[in-house]
Image (spheres, rainbow, N blue to C red):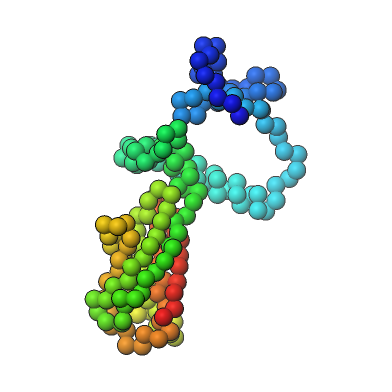
Length: 186
């Protein structure tokens, strides 16, 4: 792939030239690349799943560009050379990750806190925390609050007398409604 610079003939060009070259526009730059041919092999189940996920991501990005507020947010966060559409597409294709659940301040009492480190390639929009006892029965569930350091904090609202074996699960979500989950057992 090559970039076209200071060429009055090809600047702004897009489309195919014969069966060899293809011009495209990416972030205001003209890109010259070898034209791709059709694949003669039938797609595998994994390939079809990837195609479906990509189509869903493209649909999300197209709809996101129709909302001026969301488009502006993506445009503001996009690095140089990346369009708001491409950042939205990447955000839809990648789920958030819950990296760590810090339960050192949780002792089963009302008001105890649990800190969650969740990241995404654009931004995490919410974290839901669920606490189950050792038998698997639900003790409580609720939304965590974002802290200044961009971690999330959940404050317990129900006492948990049988702390040993309890399981804390954090589910992070992003703007395209992708989710990432992590669980820890106490």
